[in-house]
Length: 338
Image 1 (tube, one colour):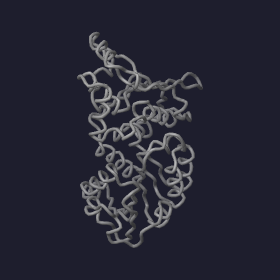
Image 2: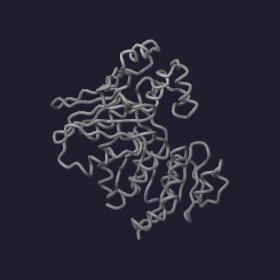
Image 3: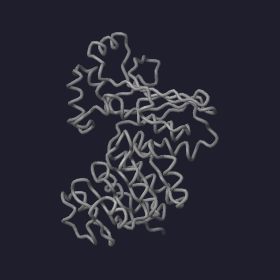
Image 4: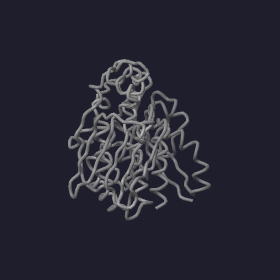
């Protein structure tokens, strides 16, 4: 039996979903994988930072508005002090993404690795802006840097190539990778205006108060950059992706596509051409013959072409914080079992 101290950095919808999943799966982790755990630290942006070396009551923490009201060994002053003092074996990092630099998440992971922790994140920023550095640092410390939930939530993309597709070289991929824009386009097909569809995604918590990261294609571009960087081995930044969002798609264009039995989708793609990568995010009309035609609402899909498998697709239906949390849990199990 192996016991691990865990620290959760970021305790919003995903962090709390992870906490609930850890509670739900704790007996299964013990009985099937020989893993037990104690959560010794939780750090939030607005509700305090808490460390308790004897273990934090997760059930209470999920419902607690102010973590500083809970029993603690210490209340750290900031995130870096939290990482230094939490004495965790594994850090789960789920802070907001920074498309331009990946900070401060990159620095959080650097410090955690320096302190000998496995680091697991759902944050795309560190993957895009510091993948090779953090991977090398993890190897030097005999730790793991895993990030399955950074693209398509809990769907096994990175681990698929890392563990089950030896000697398969990725040539290209295409997919629908941004749930928010797909919901907007689906709602517009049902009669919503663009503004009404955007408002709906905000009401259900899918889009931020400022939805530009989704509708202008930045979220899709950073996912493309992450896939290219990790799976194709070519460092790529979001700014290097040829990017067009859906802001210019009108209700008239939606209706015209429907009359032709076509649909608009925000498609993400990348293709290797020798040492060069062509990467794009742009709206495209697709017909019945396309694998992307039936992708509705928040469902995502990616189709890979490798030198050994000409067509391999992964589809994830109706993702949410729970599926993202599963990706984090899977990374935990895979990190420590190795």
